[in-house]
Length: 396
Image (tube, rainbow, N blue to C red):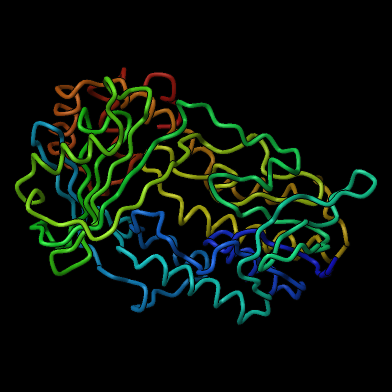
């Protein structure tokens, strides 16, 4: 069997994996990045919306090659039609871009390659190699050939399914209540605001929301995420999305160019995203915003943190769970409180009827917020609807 030897093997060339590979390689580590698909970033499994606020933080320079549309703001809408529109003057860098995600992912992988990482396409992890109980690499299939990749540490960046972490003995099990089913159409011939992302919450999308992310020239990503256990009858995500589109005159004469579907986790992160000689990043570690399902920025941050910590571990040759603990501290210090707060908010919002949601949006419209964030929105809601934030008031 063909064997490769390296310092770090990264499983998955999404944003988390590419960032981890880049920062490991920049730290002087011999790094192999594997990707099971034939093309990085495809097929699309993303709504493609990101804020601008975190790009500098992780060393990503905005590049027009992967920015499809620059948003002026966002519109939040209730099923009864009440809208709250916010622009950059209030939302700041939380307003963002609509990406060409496949180009964004390729850009990140190219940065990893430029830093010195070796990329192996059509290469999927099939198991963990242990010797004397210690992880020493992975088994893989590369272009149909069984291979081994021996490494001092494995980075699991294999997304929502997170098989690598599970094979390594980390419990990545999800409760059904922490999974949203999603479907998205790329539509043309529609009439939506070209520079505002739109979010519709309430019974049109039980436990989730409908999104419209414009991509210019009458094209937009129109999608929905729903919590299956809250759907009525035999309704599923597609049925809710089709019904929403049929009832919206801006959309119902449009045509579908592309369909994508999948699942997203909506829990606030694993109890532990590390073990001896393995580290989980991004969706694999469940580090994703529970209220929005957004995971690109979290994946990039955790990938960067992993790369920096692994660079330090290499100086002593210690990749034990204890040595990897700074990674846990980094992502928890930066994101854990926000993820838990948004998880609790997601749980509460899922219990509200349309009338209450309508009242909440009316309240937010009159709250005169200088800077609009989930935190400030919850703070305003807390004053008039304290039951909505019951159980996590101390985080607001």
